[in-house]
Length: 203
Image 1 (tube, one colour):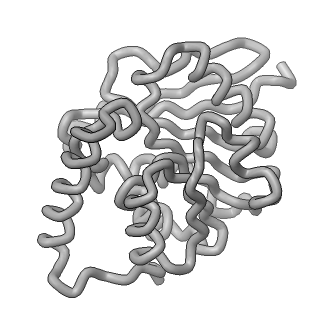
Image 2 (image 1 turned 60 degrees about the vertical axis):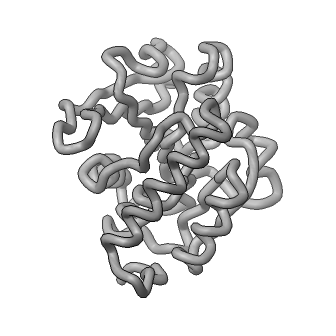
């Protein structure tokens, strides 16, 4: 059962309100919001489907925004107490706490992930699911984030990221991480793909 407090004015009003929130946030801080609308439900479900429900441990969500991927993770069968959402925008964080009262919401910087999660969540983690706008950050920042993620994840556990780009946010790096890519999710606007990284440290 989804642990979500539903908007009394209905699902359609919630979607419209979320679009407005994203546009406002993007106009105020385009580099941290990165998109003018939340992920669509088909993209969110595709990301959630790559999390192994049977693998124990916390699931970390980065950049949850208004919660479409959070909702998909719950629908996929991830228990709410396992989800720890790291959100930089305090307004989005407060909204998440209202909508998903049973998950843990952490206001902090996902790019300093180890410091942000220190003394807050015990690892190792069973998945990291990211909606961060990685292409707004330089390649060294993306690499540092991935290096942190690989240290925090269980062996073989995924770092899941979406993007609208033709190229991955980071290429595969033999001896560090592997990379799998999904087909284009055409029912998302704009179409997107899901990139799944896993540790290759034992190679």
